[in-house]
Length: 433
Image 1 (cartoon, rainbow, N blue to C red):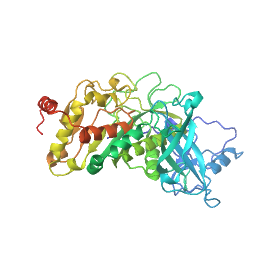
Image 2: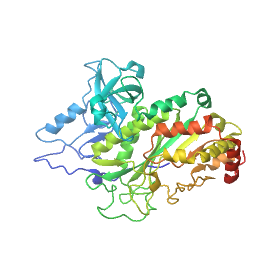
Image 3: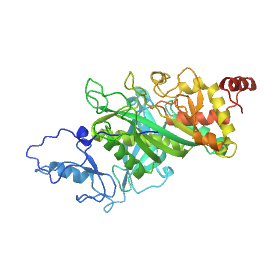
Image 4: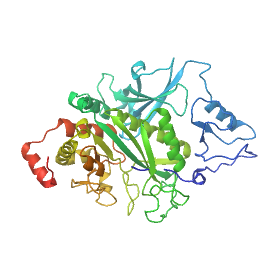
């Protein structure tokens, strides 16, 4: 599991305002906007813990914008803003639009369905472009605060059929299977990402057109010459906690300008909902920071680590006494469906899974205890206790969490290989189950 951000000087936008004066020193900035911690002496009106703030100009223009951005409308109206979020045609892009609700809501079933122009997102033809949004999960909105919400949606035709890019619908089918429900599948997902400078699309903190020193000093590091993007990571961490996302930690990664956060443990379909909501929040924060978010699994070629989305997984049977045998049976099944999983684990993953930089070869399945160069890793504690979880290290940073989580459950709970295939795989992997 790993983490993010450069010293504030690297993120401050070059703001030039004629006759501008400052009432106080600026804190760590995110572009021209920043998050202001609660308890500040600054006078801002909002009920959220994440306060937008800008420089104060003599003419008051920016100050008035700040006041409006931080305006708390709850004393004046029961209406709230719902930000409907969905996944676009590329399968990795998040889209959203806002609507006003007449009152606060607590459950997705209280929300109306909505529609959008699918021809503008690569999800429908122009002559029949309407795509319907089905609300599926609600999170508190850390940007608007109050009773305002973020709504994770999936996408359907007007006839009620999931469109091809709707991966949540298939995952929901698998997670609604009684065998899967009984096993209570847990997921802990390690989302790695890279921060890029806006105009040059080069990692944050790297000299333009050049390279920093070799990997080694950057992982989980502190210091202006080693950590690039910490304010973004911290802002994202707090925003996710505010939203109700089950984020469990963050850390700086091996390649400078690269970070990771972890979400989980989450049960079933919830894991995908929380990852997509966290990605949306990260996109919004980097947007304000003037930094580009990349989920490319190998953003920089050469002797640099790629970006993965390691998925820790366990079932009820794995967590109980004798669970290590269940884990080994799961590993056996995963080895037999290696190609199916690789094909679903993210675009461009072949550039990352080379057998170097803490990865296994994309063409060969392997497993080991405490071995980060394997396809699937088992921790020392799991081996010692005889129960626990496994870590699938193959998913790329741009993987779809609905696809990966559902496929893991399907392969390890629902799918049964032939006895002959099972015996051959067990021999090849030196597994005794």
